[in-house]
Image (cartoon, rainbow, N blue to C red; front, side, top):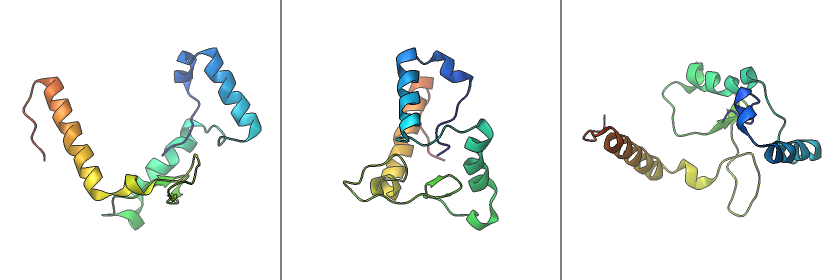
Length: 111
């Protein structure tokens, strides 16, 4: 999870939404906006760290494994337990492949 990153893409966000973000930032209810480099750091870490070689099915944010949030706990950081379920991940993968293949007019084949 790269977090909130300020790029030129936000020029397409309406003024009301940007003002809402600014209010939340000022109130401290959302994490600070990151530079593109800061946002990329977690992805680079998990892609290159020898400590994570061959390990999957985990959720990282801010260059660390995210805390698993119990049901009922609210927060903008962390990961929900159901997001780490292997069966759900495989089902999402299969559905994504099927939908992409259908869109491209191809027969779905899982690697």
